[in-house]
Image (cartoon, rainbow, N blue to C red; front, side):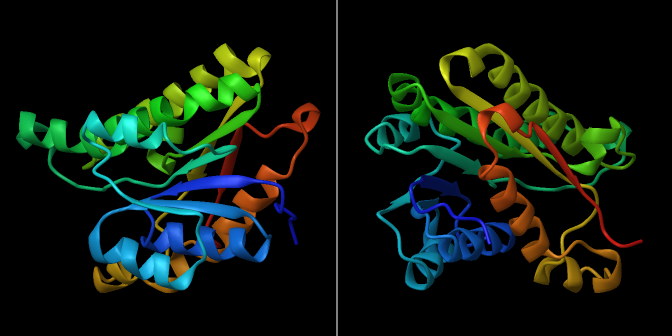
Length: 225
């Protein structure tokens, strides 16, 4: 098992299916956690996992940045995101804004919140969750989702190349298929074709323990199909 006892990790999207699996793995590894989320989902996460800070924030809003800057963390794991499908010729400007606000703007604000401390201590890690469609650069029936997740990848990898000499690194997680969540099961997807969220979480914990000279910048995790 990974040992993260010396790390303080900010986990956004707390209470979500993927974030819950990651939080369990981080807790098992001894990490200190800062949980960021909204409403009842955040309350459930805070009841289940010990945290040094619990922040109820809307990361689509500029005001969230100042709140995050009051907290010092070594690592940011950003799981906030949303999926939507639409025919490409029927997509609206509202659809575009919704996808980029949830998947990209939230990441931007979270990064802007944690970066000053990371740069000051010359050490930090930012992990963003992208998607298999973004890795393939093609998402039929989900072009806006694919584009927004590709932006996540490009942003985090650009951050890595720009700031690694200053001690701050980036990492992108690509679930190369649907994650086994209650929502996806309710949508009719079979558990056999989906990715085990605890397996994803173990991949994250493993990547977090790699030394700088063996840093992982991209992780692709596949279902067993």
